[in-house]
Length: 258
Image (tube, rainbow, N blue to C red; front, side, top):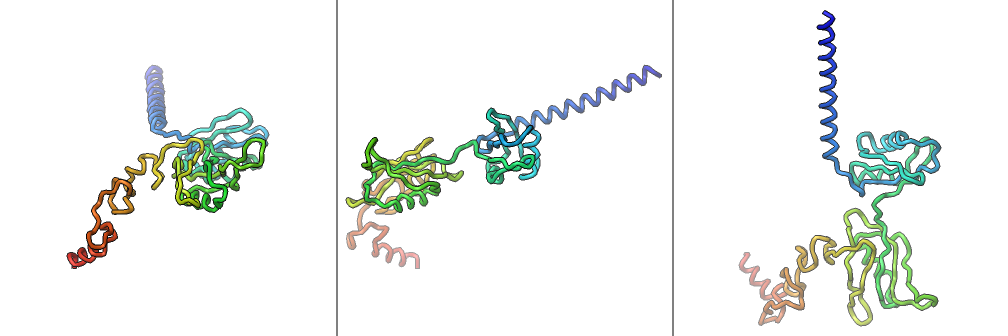
């Protein structure tokens, strides 16, 4: 009987061990499916909190955004704590600060989205409003006033202006150049910032350039795939306009569609 009881106990232990192994296997599989994004990582300043532990940070974050959204918490030197969440969007819920053990702690993003953008060698008479209009059109937000660069040791401007801006998540980079209206007509100026990559000047996508943009059209003929300077479209012999603006062509199409 004692042997049988021992056997049952061993079977029970084996069963619990097998169940634990299955659970560990499922957890490892779940961990393997996770995506750890630097864009979904924030830094929590905990230098003002006495005796803070990772458990305190986890509790505070979970109370703010809900449980089950934290992937990792890592202590850093200098009284900082690195928190990685499931989604980048969730980080925004923490950006106004986090209360840990009664102390408000500052939060900053791991993935910096603030850059100093320089517009190189602009005419000095060009109003700052033109730069602000460009930034607004690109969907980025100025967070400082526009400054004018000077030659070293002088108060003489060199034509370059710069401003600190914040990029939204969907904007990867600004184009390398842009048109500006000057006293001598439209001219291109160089645009520079850190982490800059080639983008389409029309739709801002980093996946193609202007000539390959699905939104790009020749402004003369309305066709895709070429610039106006390379346009060989035949003009209307009656009004001498390109077909996109030809009144005779529009009238003819109207008759065909009626």
